[in-house]
Length: 115
Length: 113
Image 1 (cartoon, each protein chain N blue to C red):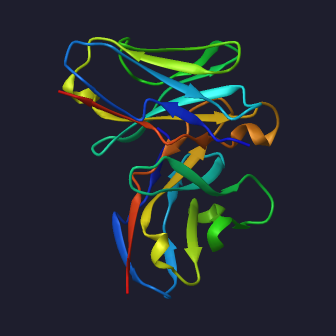
Image 2: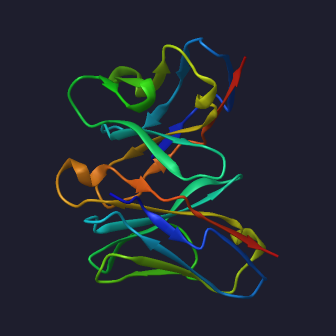
């Protein structure tokens, strides 16, 4: 079974631009979470989607948004990029129901560099 | 606030020696506990998890972890470290499905020959 895939793997953008990152979960997984990883702040939760609905959101500004499609694929968007948005963005998927819902499987991440 | 502490930022272990990485969590209720490993430029790989039951859990790559409720700890161990184990290790907790994994700051493991 294929793992979580994220595209693109690397991205360079300029301040003020916007960016869209994509995540395809493991087949059968319906929950998708997004995390931002930076050297200073570590791993921080952005949001979680299930059945095309955002169930939880972390403490990030409204410039960070996401969505989930009917096939469980998810995208996240960052508008008006700032230098501080440079980070590794990780997507994780999980099954729903029972204790397996607690196991999150991560993709390789998208490395975003804002110049 | 819920938090996870990994006291050791960087550990160096000789190849073949044993390893223990520490993790403590703060919160009254017992969360679901995880250890993840991240190699440079890669995502996170789930090493092992604790939900309930036997407090000593086995994971992949020869790792094990022990949950101690009285100490709010979930330490990761390996009897004999291999050079390929060099990576960054993250302890994480989760209180409810669909909510955020709360991660520690990570411990970087270096393996010397």
